Length: 362
Image 1 (cartoon, rainbow, N blue to C red):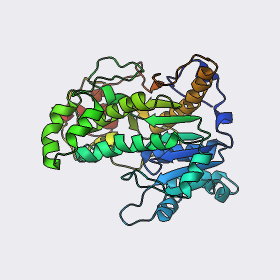
Image 2 (image 1 turned 180 degrees about the horizontal axis):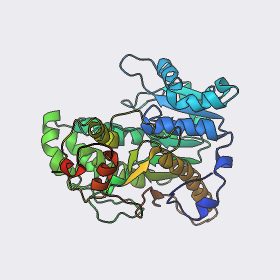
Image 3 (image 1 turned 120 degrees about the horizontal axis):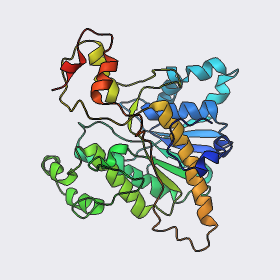
């Protein structure tokens, strides 16, 4: 399996990734989102998995079975429909379980028992990436829900690997970011902050937020940092790793070149330029963003799970290994030798347009 630009260890490059996923039961959260769709499509099309189980909530009156039908009919799965002799057999591997992470018991019986008995590999892609969501909603989704999921997975009987999807920008206040968890949250850490926020009104939380999240720029990056620290402190005994993708761009090759399904992130920046509806952005044109196509990120993510399992097996042969307190492996999916500035990026996007890209920054 070709993993372009992977930052994984040398030993992991020798792993048989395809064999790792053969007949595996894979659990995915966030499978209906941008990253999640590409992950699910890749697992179904390229890996001989036994089953892919999605944890899905009812949304705006749309039931979980209907959301699964909508997902399967999405154009992202066209390659499976076109290349497989019996695509229905492939889609039969995809299941959806109704989930409500606002409660401790987020999965009901009999699905709970089935998941604990069958799940082998877990991808926690679930997140809210909108910067305009309330502070509490972001913390609940990106931290508390992950905490509930990993507490649940402690009971799983055949667990091989968990990959928690974070972001390369979870420590963007640092000039240099190592593949480690930085436990430097202010005000006594995440648990103390949670106790501080609990009795406050939403208006009070909004007023307090800038002080709490500093020096990070927004509640999204702060919540991702909190989740990383929470994993290290509470769940390092599990076979878990933290995957940090950069800003995710449309697909380079898979499922089709340029595929994207949302108007967020870089896409939201590009479309107004292409439609010539935008004259300028506030920003530093010389700054170099961390970018990677979604299919590259998913290739790295799939390999990371295999590497997590391999590391766990290596640790088990050491009789004196103390799993509690060990730091989970962290994967920075970042290309420091292939950087372009925002000025260059905007210039490439608008190369065929009459508007001069130099006017786009103020």
